[in-house]
Structure formats: C-alpha cells, structure tokens
Length: 131
Image (cartoon, rainbow, N blue to C red; front, side):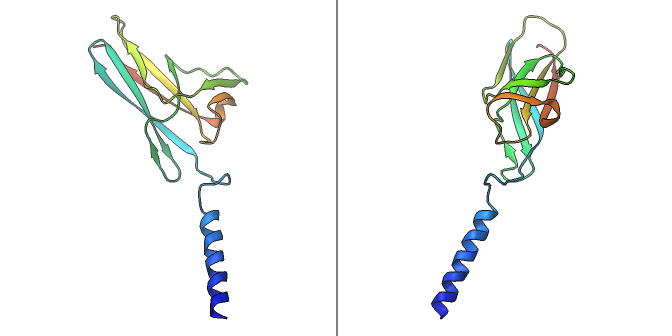
C-alpha cells in the first residue's frame, strides 16, 4: 500500500509541476521595452531589452520591430510588424536630434511577423543625437 501512495503522490506532483510551467496556458506577458545605445564613430547601435511578467523576466536582445522616428499607429487599423533580434544600426550624417522607436506583441507566443491591434503591442522610444 505504501508503494501505491508513493506512486499517486509522484504522479500528482508531476502533474502539478507541469501545470505551473510555461505551457500554452501561461499568462506571461511583455510589460515594457528598454532601448540601449552604443555609439561607435558615426554609427549608433540600438538593442532592445524586454521585461516580462514572469520568468525569465528580462530578455536581451528582445525580438522587436524597429523604426526611425515617432511611432504613430494608424487609427482603427492593425499594425504590421516583423520581429528581429538584430540590433538596429543608424549611420549618422550630421542630422540633429532624432528618435528610434520599437514595438513588440505583449504575447511572447505571437508569430514573428503579422498584424495586431496597437492595444496588444508594447512600444518604446529613445531620443538620440549623432556624435
């Protein structure tokens, strides 16, 4: 009888640990994006770091969609995106202050390309000046 109890306990613990994992029922969501920059001569490299609601809570580089300038979502339309983990490279040619923007779906299980409502995206922007 002790072996049966041990087996039932082992099965119960296994099922419990699987249900607490990061399966498709996970509520892990992207909460924010931070943009860091490194200047190298006339080039500036930008890298995105994501903060999530559950472990792993920080991801660098975060797969994002990069753009130069202000992010202005079209009213009532979905945003088209293509995610990349590659840093965004900007070559300075004497422009004044500028801004780089990024966005990513809040759902980390979203496809790497697609279209989503703006409300389901997390965005960030960082102003910069050329050296």
